Length: 506
Length: 99
Image (cartoon, rainbow over all chains, first blue to last red):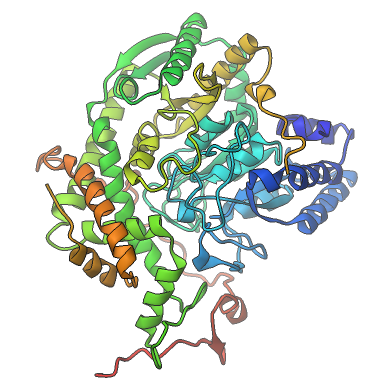
């Protein structure tokens, strides 16, 4: 394994600045690693070796001329396949978009290019980001680098597995109900869902507009902050983009990395733990809480009583928004077109029906039908209307909790990675994976998942989630970095040092 | 407790413009019933006095200056089309037999 692929993005940026290596060397090392392990991991749906190397060569030329575009100029990255990339296929893990090459870049992708970051390829995901395991990808599941028979989480399992398997130092993900944080938890990596509206959604193929958020997928909290500062900030092309600027996140990480939490009030959310949470998850979580107390944090228990209704609220709001968003896949302007069998001169509507049946997978069909139901007249008030009201109560719970605490913490996911196939045909069991991550999406607050150690019963990674008030993203970075430091000191190195090397896998 | 029948699922699939065959209806209808049962728990949680939240950030009326900005060319806009002709999307007939 090349030393270059083991380095963090921050270390790679320093090595580039010191002239110790080149972007071409770094990019080639990651492409080699992808060639070596991705047959077994399947984190990528598309690898753009030629494009990435050309972008790397341009980066090296810029640096040689004395003008790097950003601190991360030359550091390569993988991009979740739900973000539009000009000239690169964008499928959202769906057959309905197989072979689609967008004629434009998402704003966040444009910002990566402007920062000089070579794009290695597009990562696997549950179809249209609907799922918690990547098993709903039409192109086959991604495998967890810790145990190839297990799920890498979802929907952004491809991005999380890519960084966990050292195929990329950084990746972009999207988080609608936990799709960045839950994969981070089960792969032993870091994932951040920024404040809603603080990172542009332009060019993100929408799942649920009021919940979706793009964010960093990395191995360290500092790397997440560096990437967040590249992609964050106002975008006039996204009407839900907020104009406030992103707080200084790398500075927050530096403060946190001292391991000192004196005076920080940490709220343990009573409703996000206990029944339904695996023993090893609870043990690692409690250990994290104890470490924070030892570092000077003041820990209080807070109650958010409406959180017990968050999952039900989410599974009404999300399908309602998704069913209307996915109406655009009509076989007319882009994507798949399938003609119905045995119909002479089919109408546009016949073609639409046949295409959507052939192009969408089971989970997408389930959610479209559920959303259509929730929005039908006669049911609208009882379901969608009621869910919107409960959403208000969930935000009020957050407001009350943040009066007592600066940040809230919980396990990121109730269990460690389960076996591929185990919950595939049991939607409710699958939905329960997002129990602890969904409230943040409903309310728009930022959250991070940092590795919390390995569960005793199965030796698999556990994540600790830290949530902060809207626009206080710097707090999740400060406290996340502190916990990362405290745990690494205890372990004698990063958690991923204990992951299988995958050498010999292919 | 809400129950969603196979016929109802067929009707909803029709509204959502998805051709579901019999096997798919048999598979999906019971699953949808289970999901619906589990989300029905929110009924009555919020009273009439609670305002709905449609969006986490209360932004309204976001405007920009009314000036021409670069956009896709016709060629780019048509680049993903299943069929096109004379710089237009080519689609199947849009009227039914009875129209």
